[in-house]
Image 1: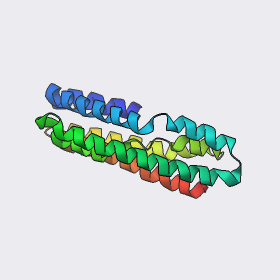
Image 2 (image 1 turned 120 degrees about the vertical axis):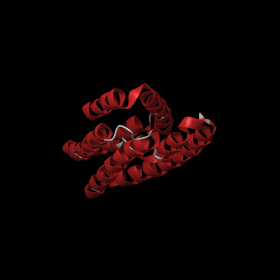
Image 3 (image 1 turned 90 degrees about the vertical axis):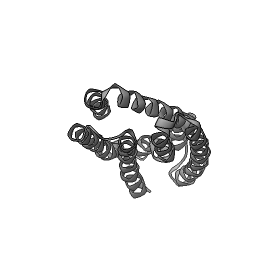
Length: 174
């Protein structure tokens, strides 16, 4: 959370109101898409994993991942359509955010770590995400002429880093 706050403060302070407003628009767009892609399934995952025996958990998790992939695909296609009809000055940034939805909506690993008795694993993926966000904030600070499209790409890349580390940790548990 603090890394996101640092990024928002730096963007607002260094890049000016126009870019900050555009970035806020893109973040709101992505937040709505992520909420639609989740639809409460993360809470259901935690409950379902806790209720199943060790033998059944892998199958339950596999079914969850297939369902989540299908849901994220539908939302991503919808978000791409919305991005294409969005404001022309934000279109590229919105398209990048829409393409990044599978990674932005991948915050379901923590319940998996908890149910498998290793909640501290979430530390590593969150540290990677936080460092990526701080690195993006430093990039904005050093290059205030960075455009909204590249800023959005950096935001998505930080979520890709989170997802890859979290997925690696999850696979080690299974």
